[in-house]
Length: 465
Image (cartoon, rainbow, N blue to C red):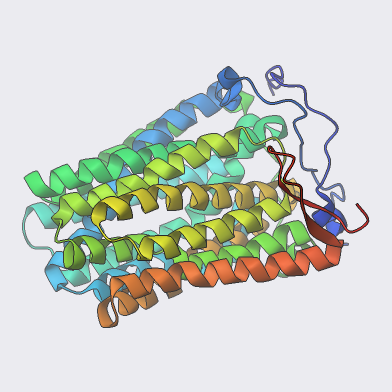
């Protein structure tokens, strides 16, 4: 195993935020009783070190393949949603497509995490990307031959959801095997940046393709991208991976993962917030399709533009999160609340220009929340159980969209898109405010206002301060 790259920043002894101090309670059956702590960087990173994890050769190869795949994946998702809307004329049908793609994770997510703990993550990813490429190719052939129907998209979306059950927990844990624990937080931020940069480019390309040649070529591009991802995985230097020992199969593995996670506030509070955000606020493309088609009559190009604006804000959030020095539970709650608030403001936008601006802010806070929650859950879990913990987190995050997709589509179709967006933002904002009050009472915290301190007028401090 190759030694980790030299550090580029002065890293202090790892600490945990006071609001999560009671989280070091591993399950008794867990063989590794030392929970990996949350690193706090004592100095602000130089800009040239914002993405320092890319210095690791394996992660650099993986990131390049991941970027190509993400651009194509966004192209396919936009094309898929728009195709269903055009074939059916129903926003609810778009929500059903989302539900079918995410429902398998709701019921089978923990099983996927157990597989990620038991088997080689790289092999799982190669298998999953191969199947995903085949599914995209089938969609491309059906669309380009003009034989595609809504039920075809439904079936392929469901099968792709089954692939996601295995792919997502393995992908989350595999990042640690690429960079090791030292650069894990930065690598998670780099992955988020890659995903959002792809989300910025993919919808724009999808809008051009949908207008010029139709959805079939977007599906074909994703099939080719899956092949490139498999190639990149095969190119990785296996002797430089930080491979964790597979966990042997035994009874009660899923129950053990659940008990372990529920014993840690730094895991279950992000889970709770992820649940509210996933159910109510993560089906944003469904609402944006309704705004583009029914409110502003902007067509496929307008739909791609709105999604690109979300990705632009998210890209900014990803870069900001990569430079974040401290990882706090209160930050997770704050970011979730701000995301909900931005969606509420977007519901009041008087024009597509103002809606686009609101989407940039929404994307920023959404990504800040998702990255913080992902980092906090990952670094709070032991490596031997991290696959199961992450699968439960993904089950909440993705499975929540299976519930929220049809609900959001129904609200947009039977009330109006503005009402749907108001509900999507209002519920997570209210949940964040409630959780903040609970955490403040548990930790005996209060708000302190000092108008003389221009840099920190409002602070959260202990009651005795």
